[in-house]
Length: 50
Image 1 (cartoon, one colour):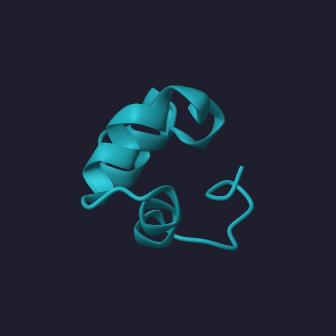
Image 2 (cartoon, helix red, strand yellow; image 1 turned 135 degrees about the horizontal axis):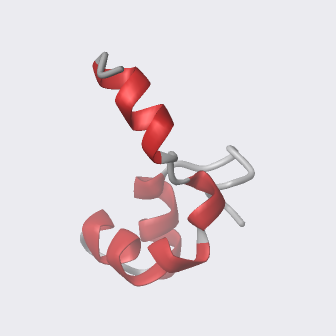
């Protein structure tokens, strides 16, 4: 919720949760943010693949 609100970045959330490394925060909580992940079409468009 903190990340998806846009009010906090991953480093801030990691600190609030007491994680020393933001990658721990991402690997632990990425499953609760599926709507934030790009679709295959969005990834293809971003890298210029038709």
